[in-house]
Image (cartoon, rainbow, N blue to C red; front, side):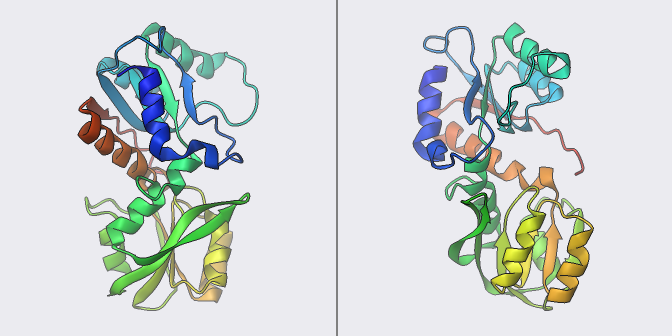
Length: 255
C-alpha cells in the first residue's frame, strides 16, 4: 500500500475530522518522498514519536511509523535541536510519520479507552469524560462486582503494575469510568456521575484527598501503559485486514 492509500484506510475508521479541538495535527505529519507511489510493506507502531522509536522503526525496515503522540501540538515549531534531528532521521530513511491523538483515545473500535473497557468486559457502555467540548472516554458496568486487585489484573493481563492505586471506593467495584493518559481532572466528572472507580494514566497530588473524601477508587495505570492499547489494536487490525508486516516499538517511560 502507498502512504495515500494507508491514510484513506486509517481515516475510514479513526474519524479524525470529528475532533477539531485536538491540538495534535492528526494524520500524515511527515510524508515519504513519493506518497502516491512508494510501496509501504512494513509499518511500525509506537506510543511516542521520539528519537528512539524512529531509529528502531528504521532499523526494523519500516517505511511508516504510526504513533499516538506525534510531533505537533497546535503551534509553530522550528526544525532545530531534538525536533530537527527526529525529522532528519525520518527523511534520511524515507520513512513517513502518522499520528492519531484524541481520535485514538476516543475511538469505539480501536481506541485506548474502549480497549481498556473491553479488557474489563464492561457492559452498558456510555460516553464519558468531556475534554474541551469533546467526549473522549467511556463508562460502564462490570458483569459482576470485582475487587480493586481483580480490576487491576484484568486491566493489565501481562502483569504490568499501575503507577498508583487509591482504593477509596467500595470493596466491590461495579461502575467504572475510563480516560487514558493524563486525565486527572476528569476525576471530578467520575465523582459527579457516581462511579465506583476511575481509571486513567496519571494523577496529581490534589487527587488524593479528592478521591478519599468522595469515596472513589482511582487506578492510575501509567500514561504510557494505558496508551499502548490503541496503537496495538490499530496494528492488529491493519495486519489482519491488509496483510502488511507490522512491528510494535516498545519504549516504556515508567510514567
